[in-house]
Image 1 (tube, rainbow, N blue to C red):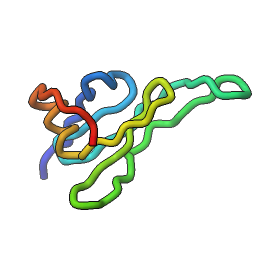
Image 2 (cartoon, rainbow, N blue to C red):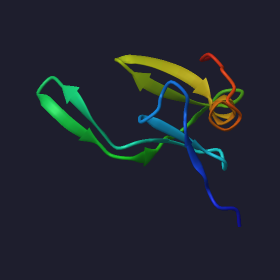
Image 3 (cartoon, rainbow, N blue to C red):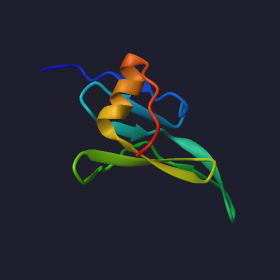
Image 4 (cartoon, helix red, strand yellow):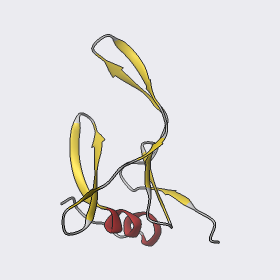
Length: 84
């Protein structure tokens, strides 16, 4: 069985990571909300399927969709790819 290795996704360091087994996770962090700060727990993101698997990443109140295989390439092969 292969060991899962996690790496930061470029431009989303400290927010999201991708693994060599094809999973994407959101990291634990504190975010500002309308009623103060709240903690977001670390979790594996659920993906949506169209033709390919994709997930939505959020940064600075902007959401961007990425194909999971592109995020893996960005994290492990240092490829620069824009969203869906």
